[in-house]
Length: 576
Image 1 (spheres, helix red, strand yellow):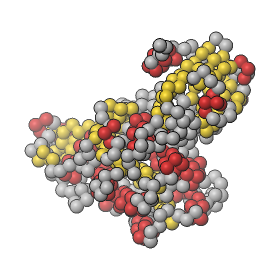
Image 2 (cartoon, rainbow, N blue to C red):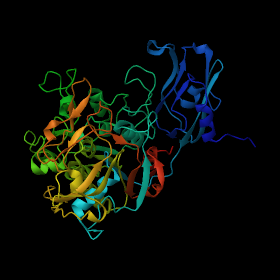
Image 3 (cartoon, rainbow, N blue to C red):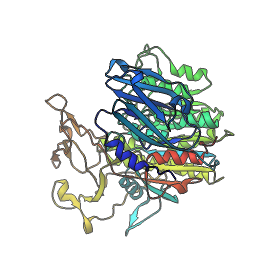
Image 4 (cartoon, rainbow, N blue to C red):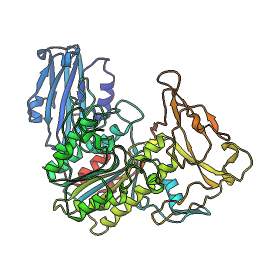
């Protein structure tokens, strides 16, 4: 009987190779869906010629295994390395695959698991992403929307009342702490990548669109199953999380290219903000560098274009199955600002709510006879956490929960829909007590009650779970663990989103925004580098909850790539 080394041992041997050894993509320990498309690439330092290198997959020629021709480029992009590349590779047969790349006395070996799937168990999948939503946000949302009396909550969040639960780890290939592009890419491709990248592995290629691609869930469900596809967000539609459903780029800020990728994949429903990158350069306010008009391109392909909530309702009422909704030039205003007419609501007074978008998208997509995949993101939970504005972030957590309730009501009809609620990454936050204005003193430290002095605040939610005000004399003590220089008074920012830091005297540095340094406020020295003007992400595991066919796979601690694996398994996308 032949003895084979476990993948973990091979990984240790691979990592022990001398610096400068060749790099193989997909990376070691990759989990690859059988029948999915990916780019195979090997980079050889020192730019050797093709006759000086050797690459095998399970001892065979890669072109034979992957069913596509290989190309060899010496000095790729004029750099000091050569590259063997196979675009659109695929492996149909599940199993263990060992890739060996040799040049001179240097050998690099990686091992992959190509996995298949059983028969399809879920007709539909709805993936909810609470961007940057830490456990603290779920707790705060429950307190604000359900109430807390004598240690017992007045009800459950829709996202809490789900039978499956798991901790999800989010680190990427290059860093302990991820960003939204990297982490969303793991959910939508099953492959980890590096910060700012999505749908690609980060290679030495110069062009941001030239890195080794891996097929996304948006492409897979359409190509392999003919399913309907929807992407709904309150960020710019080109932003990392929604873009991760369809995009392949090393640089998440390639908004113009990402719009084209949306058009190439053509999700049935596309709704969010970010209209300037859809409009030709000649149009005032456009952010394109060319004269392509993607609004008109989508319309020519049968899409209803809508820019207000009223237009959105009318389009869906007409039975339009394809809708492009762009409701703001930037991000759609969050729930707090829409409720209290702040933010950009004076310019965009008729922006939709995420829960209504979700309901209309589900109703339209459910008409597909092959099922649907829908991604819904509450994006500004994260954005408000960066600006240390927790109340706005928690309002958007409540908004996400309302959207989850809509999906659960739909799923309850047939029990054929997998619903997943998961953050893409965490922030370093916590509830440490309550601030009580009746306590003596002027500073936040004197007003903070901890332990037995952290009395229960009495937020008064409306029918949608949003408190009528957050400016209570007794309110949550929500604390941030990462922050730039700023001034802190422990009071909500009612008029506008908090801007903690502004440009300092030294170029590239930031200092506390003096606008908030009023009597009673404390000037806080940041714990981040002086180049930071906002809070940052954390490497903490995040909490996933789920229900429906396939949800039982979520338990214990899992890598973020396992979200993709569970989705494609439930949809049976790895069957020949």
